[in-house]
Image (cartoon, rainbow, N blue to C red; front, side, top):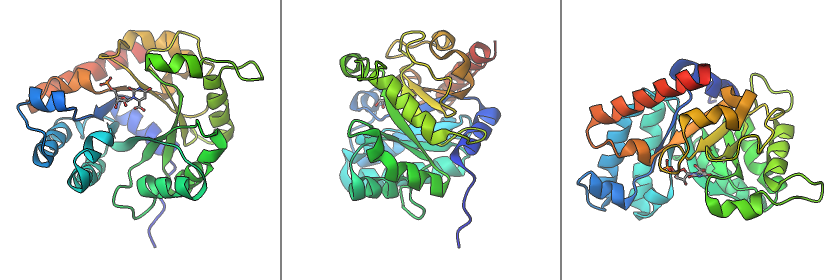
Length: 281
Ligand SMILES: O=C(O)c1cc(=O)[nH]c(=O)n1[C@@H]1O[C@H](COP(=O)(O)O)[C@@H](O)[C@H]1O
């Protein structure tokens, strides 16, 4: 029988304590492949991903491969993603699959089993999920994550400008849609220590005080640093006392330092140090 790993909230907390909170996105955009002198082929995709791992997998708490950039290459791309997951976890980083899945019933269960199920070739540590079929439709993923010591990150207030109309609109109770997602995640995390396994996604581009995270008791994935205008120094005003639970994510702004492994690692260390100063100070 496989031993059940510790709960995701605990494992993430330990990883952040050991390595700092930075999450590096592995997003092999065609433009980045070209900038690195690579072609758009499965072999080049693998080279790109393995270079990122060599530079940062032993440095940062979390790696977040964006599935679409691997799926583009069909089964060979997915095979590269499997290798990324295995090698990242081997190097001690947690893997968050950025897949933004949202569906109902047995289909949601199948998505959760693919990315979070024990024994799945793609099983990482967490996945991003979309609540726009109803937070309750995510129950299979929330449940499978809990049973397997894994996590989910539920899209609440995403970093893209198109999200504003929907996510900032008011629900019948007068809260914003985004706040209702945070509050639903808070209910799933109630009583968990040191924090629950249901995280939310809130861009590092939101307005200060836009959301109340005080009851969340779970992690906040905050993409949008650098290329989308988010800054390390802006995080405190956006997240306030929830800052210790924030996992800021960056992809393009670091990946542009490749393909030189040392330059990529140096840029990552610099950003981690800036974060430590901003979060701790
Ligand atoms: O879920 C995500 O990771 C995500 C949520 C969000 O609100 N905004 C957002 O940009 N992302 C992802 O974060 C990555 C963008 O990273 P940058 O290159 O640093 O802008 C992409 O993979 C996006 O899909």
